[in-house]
Length: 70
Image 1 (tube, helix red, strand yellow):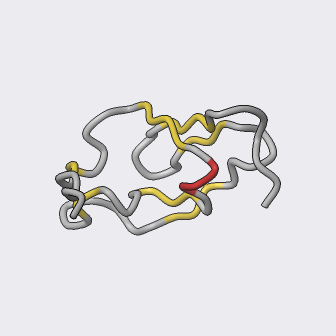
Image 2: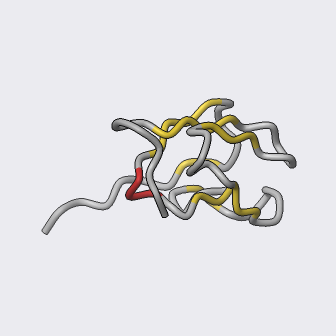
């Protein structure tokens, strides 16, 4: 059985790389601890490959080739 990676504190860093498998993209992400954070907001990253959270300012970059069609 594969080990589950530990949850990270929401907004612990300012830049994150995401892949098409992470879509639809929300901040905080499912890998983040949700308490002590902001409301979940979905970010449109598919067309540009980049998005910024309006609450915390975290920046997300879509990696692994061209932006995914979703």
